[in-house]
Length: 188
Image 1 (cartoon, rainbow, N blue to C red):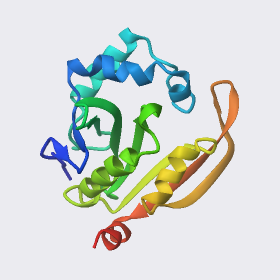
Image 2: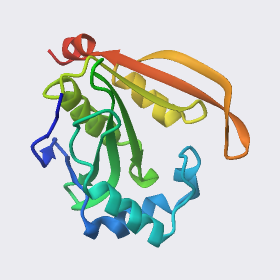
Image 3: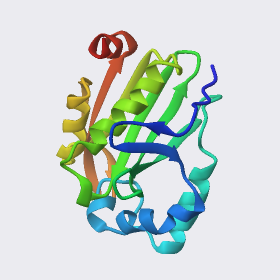
Image 4: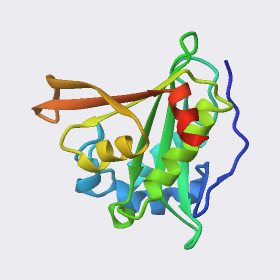
């Protein structure tokens, strides 16, 4: 299984595209924020750390084998600036399993941009990616994230209680998922 999407991917209001070096300041604007880092494995990033993260993402544009990632900048067409990022990780090529994720600038939340971007990514995962199952996970306190999963039609499959130490405390995690046939049924 290999997936090499045709970029950029355009939606009504957004462009999903590979990262470029010119995206560092826009990404730093949200990745430096404590309220963004709160539920991420990373801490709030310095500009230098952000530049390194963007550099790593530049080449993450295709899925060929287990663990490969597609990480795309989400650009708001109206202002031609990056407001977030979406990711698709190939968890198992043999079982056709993937995982999606997202990080968005809180200044642009509540306007449907994350739903629009995640929908485009799931169209790729279940369309040309031919994945059978896609999951997503988040901290249970991250209501914005799990509500997005529910808007996408994903079902909650697990609630892990105190399953790992995260930033010095026991965390709780929700796992959501959906099958290809469920996604295609929603899209038809």
